Figure 1 (cartoon, rainbow, N blue to C red):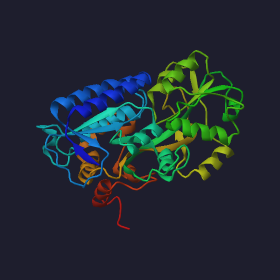
Figure 2: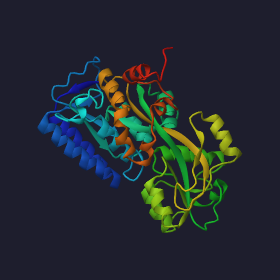
Figure 3: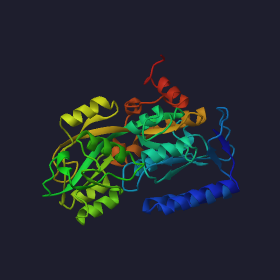
Figure 4: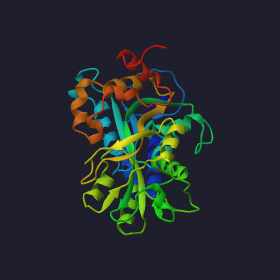
Length: 371
């Protein structure tokens, strides 16, 4: 991966990607606006653009670096966390906060947080060089790295920057629906999120464990935001959503006292966890959502990933800034998922190798040891 200075091709890339995202719907519109604006800024300011082309590990940044972080929908948990992390690693010229060498990313770093479709598409974007980095679920990252469905070939170029936090599967139904377990979805209408999202992968595996499929259940492929509206309109009976708790799309519904969260548990779930090493038993604690008692479910880990050819020094400095103790106030002022993050979370539930730059930081911090 090398750094290229700003120019007409960057503007074209941003405009093309933005237009494509606009065609994909409301969350894509955020990407469209962000891409066009940042593309124009790159054209005018001549900042460097991270591109997927082989190079050495040097990081010669004369005029700045533009660094994408592909996240998720704007009402999910990836997007607000991405903005917090971007505020930590950004290193604008003349920033007083960045006078201490380790508090920010490399000088001139300009992160661009992009709303996106979800784990599968984010992983593909990193692998294909369309995004410098992305957030994705650990189970989907494992599938990609090992070439398991829905991926056709192994994506062995994926590397981890950091583990982030645990994500829980939310199984949402209307209050009084008489849906009390996964089994009760037989013959019902349920949204399992869009193809390409991490939710889609987890939901289809859970349903399969209970013998449910399109043959005996009506499966709908809508985002959590759209699914929430459809649930309220009685157009579907339930929806699934994998996210860190609390997640706004679910919180907005529970605040209306109109929905319940159903446990995802039983022998079928235990067997699924035993077969899938990056699925874990999880609990949504009591009162995470208004008037919702503790809910047992399954979970995964959110990861931050890059390609293996991302510059060593870039990833090293970004990782060091993320876990600098002086940056704790920024994390604690962020969304719920960011407030309790600690360095130990960085190395938990990571199914792929760390990028060499991240690994170097974790070795220095005593979080990893030499083999």
